[in-house]
Image (tube, rainbow, N blue to C red; front, side, top):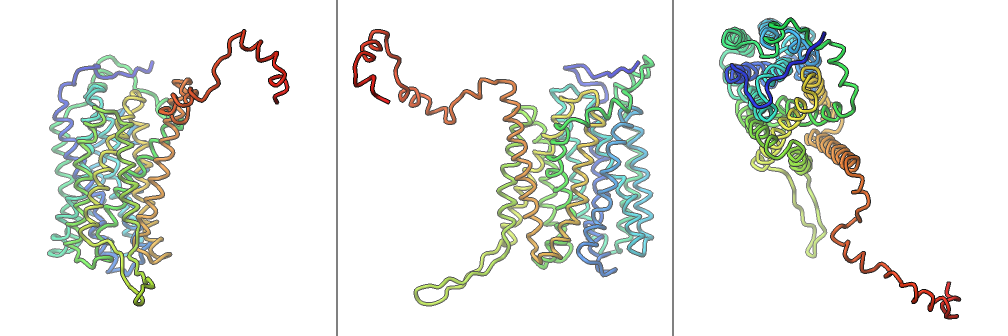
Amino acid sequence: MTVAITPPATQTAPGAGMALWMSTFSFTACFAVWTIFSIIGVQIKQNLGLTEAQFGLLAGTPILTGSLVRVFLGIWADQYGGRVVNLMVMLSAALATFLLSHAQTYPQFLLAALGVGMAGGSFAVGVAYVSKFFPKTKQGTALGIFGAGNVGAAVTKFAAPFVMIAYGWQTVAQVWAAALAVIAVIYFLLTRDDPELVERRRTGAKPVAAAMQFAPLKKLQVWRFALYYFFVFGAFVALALWLPHYLVGVYHLDIRTAGMLAAAYSIPGSLFRVFGGWLSDKIGARKVMYITFGISVVATFLLSYPPTSYVVDGVNGPIAFRLATGLVPFIVLLFCLGFAMSLGKAAVYKHIPVYYPDTIGSVGGLVGMVGGLGGFVLPIAFGALNDLTGVWTSCFMLLFVLVASALTWMHFAIRRMEHADAPQLGDLPELPEMAALHADLQPRPVSGASARARAATPATRGAP
């Protein structure tokens, strides 16, 4: 018989603190490896003479692997325990990252990048593992803290440029690989198995079957969550990979400065995820998603505007002026976008343990997979748009369309659910605040005597 065991409704399981903080630490290391091409890829592009689209493919290939494996890794984490699965994921990614330093041709780099991408699968494992230590009222905060491991992208942007300039990109790959392997062993030694796995071993119960794990994936709601995550996480990863290259190309910065400024996006996009988890617990994930998409629509619209020169026919002759986003306004808008995305990443995963407590691994894995695919598809799309349009801000134009579509779908889905739960809402006037005026404009009921008198009047009878 298959038994799904959940932690107590109001209690935190023993070992939760160590599981949370070590999982966050290991995920930070994995994310640093996962986004390594955001820095070393710039040098590799120059060495191999790659096009924009080829660079986008190289930077996005690790994201592809880390996304596709998330569903299966999430299910395995539910069945065999996240602790041992995460150890295997980290060690395999460390090996692939070390082998990357020996690649010489573009196909070899792509092959190595597929292996490096295993590091991205640690997220689905961590969600399934960490959530089982905490009650529902604290899962948003806990998963927000865990998800802050996205700051690993900023670690790579800060440190990798200095190592690469001093010792070469090969040393970056080797150092990152060694650090990941060491952290994997420390993580395994200091954590314990999740309470659900321990209870299954004690009782001899079987885990939820794989077929049942996949059942919720047929629901449209799961795919709607996945679209949200495609933007808040996939676009975050895509920009984390693309920004150093963007800053070098648009603002003509050196790679070290570009890496540090790109961290102004990666850091809020990671650390504020903790606040997003807490806020989702307090005011609800739905409201947080509205905040996320609202800020993102405005930010991506402003970032989409390309540098443009105008000539106006004035009274005294032509007046020429130019509109362009300077470096400082660009960083400010980027910070706001990263902040909004951080809230959304936590809010999306707040939904999953609440709606699908028995299939967190598969549902969380699918949502993470689709989100991760955004990190693969979007850098390629950014490069292709650059080649096609020759406009650097075309990447933000694409993101504006994406977030506007997600906001529209979310809003109408919520309206449908509200009307399904409360059909009487459909009887409300379009402008509820005008209800009193509508009532005053309605004809007053006529008494029986008055009606008979009016009926006897010829003028009344003849009125159309």
